[in-house]
Every structure is written in C-alpha cells, then in structure tokens.
Image (tube, rainbow, N blue to C red):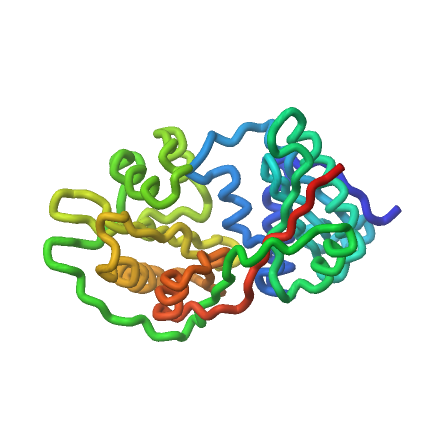
Length: 311
C-alpha cells in the first residue's frame, strides 16, 4: 500500500513536518497550520513544558511513492489537542485520506475523554473555504457551532502607519527570562492560561527557531509595567510570519497601544526575509477586526467550530 501512517517523534520528524506545512502552504495558503504554530506546540511559553509522551498526539501519513528527491514524503498530519480538539493537515492532492485522519482523531478523543466531562467530544476549526472537509464532517454527523476566528493576511507592500507613542511610555524589546514576572502578568491578563508561565517555559521559548528577541516587544509604562505586548514569529526556513500573541492589559485599553505596537513590530520586521505575513485564528470581535483591518491585515476567511459527541 502506497499510503502509510505512523507515529511522530519530534527529533526525527519535526523538520519533515515543517517542510510539509511549507509545501502545502505554497499550494493553498493557510489550509493547514503554518510552521511556527506547529513549532509552538513544543516551545510555546504558556502551559506545561512539552514532554516526549505528547508525541503520541501527532500522527503522520506518508506516500511511499513520493520521489526520493522530495523534501518530505508526508501527505497528511493529524494533531490532537486534549481533551477535545482535532486538526487535519492535508496535502490538497491527498484529500482521500482525510477520513482516516478523522478516525484517528476520534479514537484519541474517546481515549482522552474517558472518565472526564469531555468524554467523547471532538471539535474541528474549519475555514469556510475548506469545502471538502466541511462536506466530510457534515456526513459524519458533525454540526457547525458557529464562528470561531478570522484568518487575516497582510500584503507585504502595504504601507506601515505612523503613530506617536504616548508620553511616559516607550516601546522596546523585552527579555522574557529576566522580566518574566511582568511578561507573565501582561500576557496572563489577556490569555489566562499564560498565568502559569514558568522560567523553564521562558527559556524554552527563547530557544525556538522562530524566536527573535528584537521581535518580542512591549509598550512599557514609566513604572516599568507592560501595557501591551506583541510577538512576531518568523519561520527561518520559509519566511512565513505570524503576529502571535498580540494583546493589551485591561488597565491600558482604548489608548491605541496595540496599533502603535504592531506598527513598531512591522518596522522591526523589515530586515527579515519574510515571504508571507498573517494573523491566523484572529479574534473575530469587532474591536479585533477594526485593529487588524487598520493595520492592513485583510480578512481572507472565517473559521467555524464543528463538533460532535462521539459514541
């Protein structure tokens, strides 16, 4: 049989998965995860430190007929995020294996949910233009639970707006290790799961291939607090770039700080070899849409949450 699935091992397979995500992005941008999102599974600063046992939540499908000159034989990658999130990453020419990936993800959800309130629940976050996957999920009994996020892309030649930094504040790069308490407080005020960030998380994050300390920035007050934050992740192989995360501490909102910070980040990123700039999975709220629209990030697709209670 030409198509075979197998287990994933980070040390052996990360670069192969990265090349797969790059290859499929060139064919259909943002159909799948981008490389920085996948790398962030292991190096992200929020949540428990990645353990080797978590490799079991990723599975690879390969085409053994692929040319030996191909950068990767991978044609599909299933990713499970416990307890109930599934992600199908597929080469557009191999959509016939999507059903197999979904079956594996359903098995993971049932196993992960045993004895919990999430038992047998599985959800997917699907772009509105991914008709093949939507049709497949509908046929399997999944239901559209509503809008989840926006995918936004910024043309590389779009001009960078000019803003003035408020008096008493400055924009600068931050040191996530030396300034962990302030970094954690700012991010945790917006993303609650970041309140558990540890010094080990910080050191691991700084070692990611996408991490550039000059692109991890904050608006800092006279008192040294982080009023707003932004990280720009640049995949060093493809140049695919995402603004993630971006946020403003609740005490400093409605002052335009996020716009000021993004503009500064865009200028800092001008010396990078960027091929594509995006905010995948952006918050679909009116405020977030206004912010990203003002900064040139165009809405390219809406993403909807499809879910099902499994037997």
